Length: 382
View 1 (cartoon, one colour):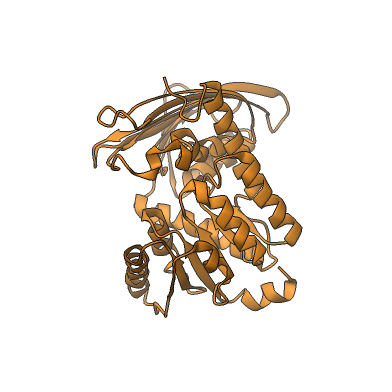
View 2 (cartoon, helix red, strand yellow; view 1 turned 45 degrees about the horizontal axis):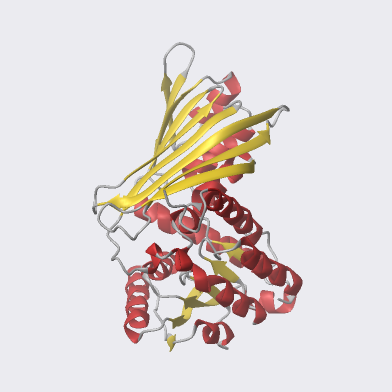
């Protein structure tokens, strides 16, 4: 993308959405309050899907006091990428289609906001990244965890040296399992399986928060208790290593359990993080509540006490208790999507880099694939 074109588009961006399923519609709802973004076109295979997504956009725009505008309907996502009214493409198709659509957008010179995992194979996503780099087209993964206010605080505390050596990272994700038996999510040939389609979020967050390098990985998967053909439960263990901000290396084993089996309204997600100087617990797959106990030096305690989101109280011995809570999980989720999209637009206008470049997606996908392959197949069946 030329500097002249980027400058012309910096004030207003016409969005094309490729893939109008549940998450594609959520992207539209999240981006609707942005006055610099208009929806130009939606691509999906059925008119009903396209029109439902457009209605959701229109409702969210009205709620934000903004016009919905005219939106073109397109059947083929590749045609949407070439549509003259589209400046930037959000790709929210099933994973098996994502690299083809992303390549079409890059070939058309359109910045790409790519839903995870971006591809089923790291090589396919790496090819998209290579083409984008060659053509100067900004492209980003929708790795929303990088925009989490709570994880951003953990990252900054670690980098300031207040947490000490990382010792443990565990994710427990009991998610909803209400999808029908024929849904693409359950087909590893389309989704890559739970560890690939969903797990990359959490693999990337460890790398990002701790500036960590992933190593050997292992996983195992088991079927949904009510859908024997759906590998809905997955456990993975990944070794990570890194260097402390003040010097010295570290090594930890991170574990990730994902189970898409819970009835609606009965989900449970938590992260347990262990450090030399204490522990942190973060509730919600979209992080919404943080608590923990830390032994902080005076500078660290002063910094945390000055953070309006964080409550600091006396803890056992010389430790302090820390707590933080986001008031609205769904709005936090929408804002995390907006943050990644804004960063992409800024990069396209020549200001900065995407929050999660495609290389981050390649790295996370490579770890997920190593874990699955260590279990002996696409689903990692037990």
